[in-house]
Image (cartoon, rainbow, N blue to C red; front, side, top):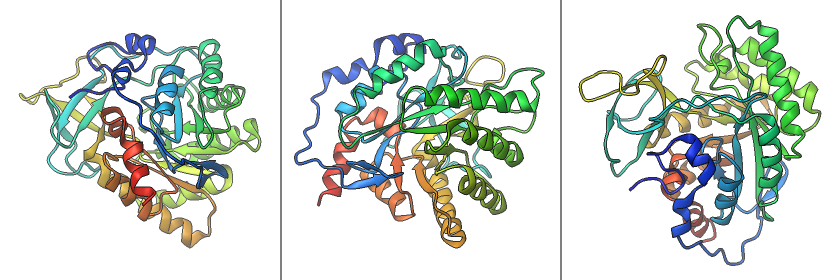
Length: 355
């Protein structure tokens, strides 16, 4: 079974234009007596569950996700300028030897069909339309948001050759300004994708992360801000992140994908192209890593008496996965792969939440 949200055999551009046509074949779930019984960042929501930045490329995808009952929807990460997508393949099924974590099992093998517990790699490169397109489309997406639902606008800065640190910071701030102009009620800065030199993800350079968040806060005023980050090996780094979030943000979203070497059955690079040996893995294989980060952040939050909220992401494929994250301290849970392969996931969770 392939994803109902996204045709993995077609390009990003084709999917962007078509929307999630696989959902048209499905009957929409009926939520009886649905009321916003929960809150996230002060906003009433039907359930503290939704879809993170990734699957919702434009207003067509937001409209479909809204119709299938996902309460908190994050519009795909946008940039201050047009940015192309990597060529096909963009999504491949993979198998791992147990749970995937930073410390081990970072080589995974591509398979032709998904197993019962779906894990995938996605290699898109965080494409973005130009702001002349995405700003207007976000406004259209907002028109599809129903009572008890919330749209989050995700954005990032673009790392460029020979760029100064300040130029990168300024581009993050510019993207934040453009995102705020859409009138989205909550913004999310993606600190877990763009590379800076040889240091890896922005979120792993906490000095730069603090400067970026400070610049964004200056630009957006009191608009709620989520910091989207990756997996941290060391507790001291997570503690520094918590202090940054407490000063400049309102929530931390963990985790994004875990980068791994994507190999074919012969042990060779599976995704052709320069700089595509490493690619993000998501789905079932990263649940343990996501749960671990939420649990650690929740303890740091309690010990520090911090006020930020926690968004748990990673390997949420079933209602039980959702409740596991909630028990560990997630104020909101989001699912990308799980929602893409099971559009009824929000409905399945709602039935258990209302028991």
